[in-house]
Length: 204
Length: 208
Image (spheres, rainbow over the protein chains, first blue to last red):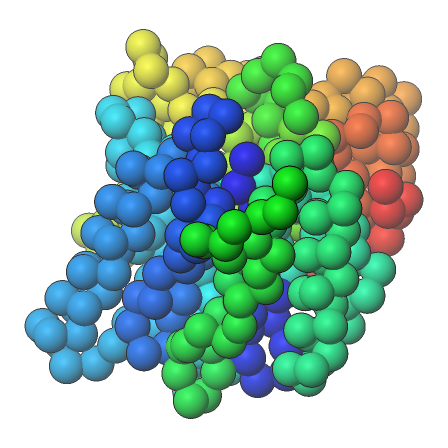
């Protein structure tokens, strides 16, 4: 089961996701990127049904771009979150998307923000959030060590603590994670945490 | 974790509204959960429709958000057309109609409506998920803690309480009831409404 979590720091927000693409007992790949960069200052980490995840996040990304083309200004993070919730809510009673989303963004006026949107379209603005079996460990670690206005270094330390917990305590722990950050300079990949590289030949 | 899906208990909630002397109070808990896991401790369940009308929505959080957006939309249109606020009785009928529209695919919601009507007479009501109104003169309750709330309100309520006493009573009833329900709690949110002012208070209870 896929783990996605995120937190808000002093002038930035971080989203972390595992990077295994799994089909029943088979691991297809271990470097799947589940955090979509929606635009220059927004990240959408998603977990859930693989096809729905890829389709839905791309749909949101293209609609965010369309808004900017039509109106000349980008959507705020809050507007994007509410748009996403609206799409999930409309589809819910017809053809639901089984995708859980952590949306992080940086707006010039309001700073960094993080939104929790689950697959039944419940929306909530939070400072720290997590989905998946890994959430039981990530949320507990964040409850213990999170403080408001952490620096990037402190936040990454906390993220690493969460990753260590997930790796050591989850029975089918994902080996690799991707970390992305969004701040005033934009949304970008920050780091990977890999314990297995694709193509690596492991000694028996 | 696999727990049998009970849709009305998925997110957890507790709501209560009480009538006082020319005033009313409406209170909710603050927990947003996903079955056994707590996701947030500052979730808003009570919404202002206009200065003298509040609605609390218990049940599935997603439907609460959808329904709230629909109701605000309808009330804004009404305000534009009628150039006045909706009376609480009218609003309750509107909510009931909107819920019954979805009779065979309902919103998983139990609303609690509280407002000051003509001559600032307090009005409270609740309804089930398909819009069956239940008007009461004293108090109405909803949510996963509703059974505890019925007991607490029945024993603590007195008619014609003034605003301060009403606030104390509703707060104690809410906090003691949510302490017996694992799916609701993490503090309380109380709105006390009199003809002249609206006070919003956050309660600190057991945070578990």
